[in-house]
Length: 373
Image (cartoon, rainbow, N blue to C red):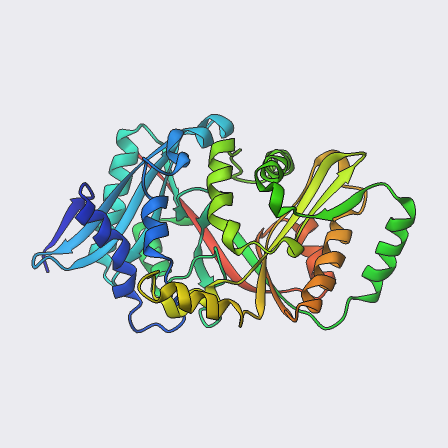
């Protein structure tokens, strides 16, 4: 089979790039299609503020009769390289038929572009950075993916390993079945309340922009020592927040304050993938109605973010967050929670989640390969 590599340049090309997963997963009932309109905005340098500090190129692999066989993005995030003092290029948005020749062509193209940008390694998959969807699913292909977590066929790992990529870090997802609040957590929160060192409140949607300023400041402070972390620009954080605004339940977003100073936040999202599944990526003509009806049936959530500023991490804020969220979820009849993702070696986070009943159930992998000039 003759395969042609094509750089994405036209509107038609980007449409093919976005539509390819529908072909790859046409017989896979587990996959959930993202909204095509959202993907188009996300990938656009004119719309997504990520591209204020990064650049990317998209490639398609085509058969001679024009059928799309694979896709990939090659990315250079200047903020990442400045922050970590590296010369790292990234690849992401990887989708491919089960064919080594196709995957090799795509990965070679991404590597060549990164080499031309004087990068000395290529890491991924990241769609498009550590602050977005990242990692390749390598364990548990049966549970449906939750909102914001990638899904892929099992054979993708073989394609990446064949090309010479090696594991650099795993991201763990934990599954928590809610029954009753653990007694130890109840006792801990009772003691913490008596000390009265901080207060916790819910997100105020009528002050959404101001609240996002608070969360942005906490985010960049609380995660700065995490592996791979890249600080987010205000404009970029707000862009992502606006995309999530329609699905945020303020009862599940908690902000901690110490003497009026923002100290941490905890965000849980309803698993809107359950509502998106029947839409097949289309908002019109009836996708919006399917989404509204589907939202009423959501019975799962995802803990997407827990962050506490370093100077406040010994006050018990995290335990209070777990307790408040646990209680609220049970009150609204959601009894299953995905807690993701957590770095595989972050025992300070995994330990407490396991203590309240969380069980590791999925694993996503980030790979890397050196680039020789």
